[in-house]
Length: 106
Ligand SMILES: [Zn+2]
Image (cartoon, rainbow, N blue to C red; front, side, top):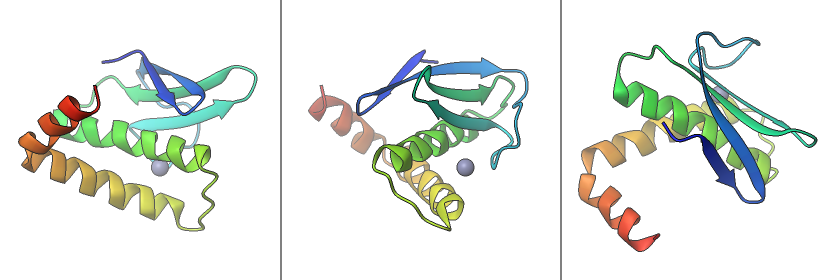
């Protein structure tokens, strides 16, 4: 697992945790940002399925993107869940697409 994630100017620490502490929309992950200490993505360390874990990480990254772009939606959670599921599905089903992105975004 990578340790840092940059979203625009904001740097997030990525931390594997035994449990998500605060009430979270997602029991396996949580996003937070504090202007004084920076960002934190917490990902549970016992997610058994790699695809589920990838979707959890994508889910929290999308929350960070909503924050960065100041997207305020009453249905943010639904949008984030749907987009995380969809992006994970497309990337899993199309490994050449992922390889293409990796090559083009070097
Ligand atoms: Zn969420």
